[in-house]
Length: 241
Length: 395
Image (cartoon, rainbow over all chains, first blue to last red; front, side):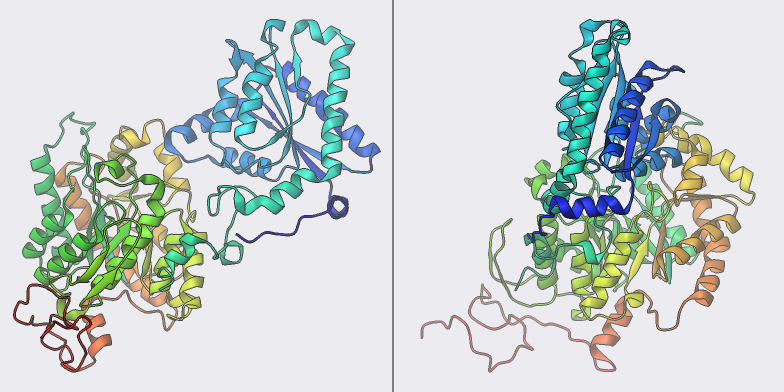
């Protein structure tokens, strides 16, 4: 294994200064307006405000899964993402941070959200910071975010923020929801400012399992990206005889 | 440039009639399709290898040997031969024998296959799939090029003084293609040996496999076999042809949309977004020409067109249309667009002439049986009599 030098936060600060940070919202809400989207929007706006105060401009793209439902289902069955789904995947691949928000149905996250996660490359979100959010019709679903979204993003080796967001009808009338949103947004801002996520992905990249020419922005695409100093590559080249 | 067809020998219920071919029927039909491909002047017929229903070709060398006897000019190949779960020693023997009976009309495509449970059926560990493929081919390569092989690896018993028989026809091994759709190590191995690289080019977005093909081309040049444009590239494809475009789509739609693999998928979507070509001969020609633009000049184009439960009469008609209306135009068009210096895919004749020039090819004749190969340089009469025995017998 070759190891790349570990970047210092300063380098990332200068990196980040060269372009706005890219936040991507993934919302599995299906109504319009949707509380699921609203919760994500509030977290996003707060994050942008905090980033702005810290001198880190950011842009936002939103992936509404409701419009991709058919393509997501087809991609699961036939393995071929449609044009709009592929565009969404590429948007997510290029994200510096993700705000993921889903409704709770039948005591679990939306099947649409899970299906979308199922078609993502395993290495698409490595070490990317994520705010986890869910909405429900009753506060009794409050643990769904931590019991279902958090392990899902752990599998994807993303970095869920310590504070999860959950909003049942009662919460929309309470100022403590705003406090929790501010806490999660602050965590995300600090994480982005530290550059540690990008640093982890960068310096450990070859240690994760990857698909050649996959969707991840750092995926190997050509000879220049490929590590030939591995047991398998030596075996491919005649086995070192 | 070679044009041909490849089949996985699948069986499925015909969605328009409900009938399912028996294994006996499908095997006979495969032979008829191969014969027709030969008659209409296609260059290659390749057969997949599967070890589970609803597929019939578990034993490609047997079926291909039969086809060899019934055909005149077509090159027989595989798509793919499982280099992971087959013993490379047996592969060396079976395909050398097939090469002899086919009078050199044989090459081979090795690959890992895509059926997970097949590994334990043959006593192999899928977690070692890539390493198995690489090591097994390394051994196969030597068995066809060295009369006597001492070998030790991780996945099978070591060999001491082993000779794979028969030696390849004219002592020229069958040309080998490496089939791969995701693994750069396989492309690397193809490049290292100067072998061909085949990208299946179906069931994925257009030009999805271009990064792997480019990787192979770069490494082919790196290993000194020629420039990257001279690397030996093959592409798959899938086609359904009718004189009129709308007839092709209408006839093919139920077969596509009812096939288990494609249930829930839209034919129009696959036609637009993947290399699948459904339409008039001109439409199939035009789409195939985009492959040349996207992947660069290449040496072999194979289409899958006898599967998806098509009745054999339809499959035969497809072969006919491909051979008479599509391929003749593609031959001309691709040749006209081809850059100078791009080689054709190797054939037995070209490999013999590259090895021997105008000289007579080697015809190995065994020495009288000593019962083993361990005590001399070679079990063949043309071995150097002055070469010292490695383990001389005690006087």
